[in-house]
Length: 558
Image 1 (tube, rainbow, N blue to C red):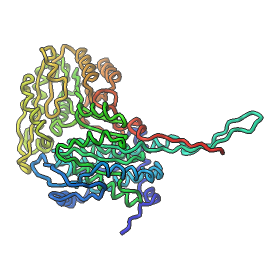
Image 2 (cartoon, one colour; image 1 turned 135 degrees about the vertical axis):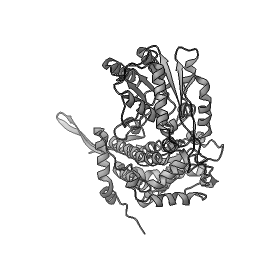
Image 3 (cartoon, rainbow, N blue to C red; image 1 turned 45 degrees about the vertical axis):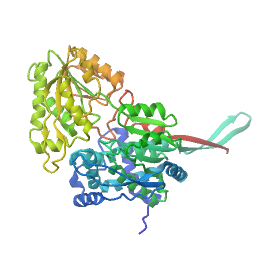
Image 4 (tube, one colour; image 1 turned 180 degrees about the vertical axis):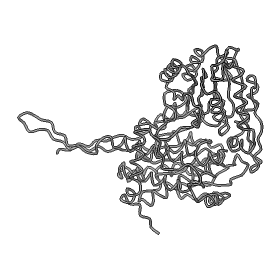
């Protein structure tokens, strides 16, 4: 049965959504077209069945250059997925992608945006299926995989489409130009301005948030006219393979070459990301992952515009609070969510050695640390609740870092193993809290590098002033995706803001309720700033999309 995805049909379906996205980005108010509660999506059983049907089979993807099959994903919950994916020869795949771009460029910004919104709508309708794919490749608990890997990721993709459309249409498509010449005839030109793509965009996926971190770059590049090659992390292929399949289906139905979006899955040890990153056809690269490879991309992929999100050391300055219990509960949840395996999870908590002022009286450093440890223990006391918050450790490296953390300082809260009755092979661990004194020899070597996973450091400092200086040094030298502060002093609040303005870090102040520092909302919150070593781009602002295209002017006599 043929599907009508003409520009008229696409406009009828999605122009309203695009306009609302543009307005939400302008006002920064809450808005989402994608409900985040699983009950809003009635196909729960069908979605689970669709996921199960993928296991143990080859993933069908009819794209050029297939020269074999590969795949070795094992769920952090103990299941071998057994999915094989086509392995592509870049020498055949990349030219086919380049050949697909002229028609996509000619479609114009509006049609491209509406096709992208249709792709997101198709993905949204399969959110339950995607949630299981995210859960079993990342170790996220189901609810988080559903929300972060589904609606929240889709929101970030739509946000990128809206920004891309706004930037491409900022310049009018045509203009009449007349320059008076006094008594002579005026000079008259007719000018056209066409946004043109840069080339092929390469999206290098991450293990922990393949859709949430992958969709902004994918849809920003696609909406600006570029073809997109998706290279997933070898342990988290399935969510992005499903995404590529959905995109290719919509593109074909809309009358465009499906090779505008392709998948590149690597064989074990192949190092495909490095190979692809240096190809001359690749002009845009989006990467989330380790600092080492992010630095390599920035230094070596000279032919491409590179957008990186790397490691950072997220810091909390605790000066004082008028809601001590609320502060502890908020921090306990932030440290526990997905076992701290988020780029936005707080790592270092800077606390004056003499203590902090609270609504329950003065609390010494040791008391704050003990109370926070108790708050985490209370939150995660029941294994069922703990498993639902913690998920599973994504890979053995995280487990190794957690086990080594006890040697870095005084263990204020020891990690414990949690049993997940549904998935007994899952490695589930509660967070460890390590107490350190900033004045101790070599203390900085323990906490001034990212310790990705369920490890945080309570660091005693001489004063709030010392905490602010340590915060400044940390962000400047190591970067931070998030900064958080607790204070009842307007002056300390002002100085916290000043540090974050000068070092370009996103700041959250006095969070004690249901908003947490490691969560950001599309259309309103910026994820990263692009202004410190943790990331060279922000999700999502105009700078994230504007360099993905260039405007070509054609002048003719009027």
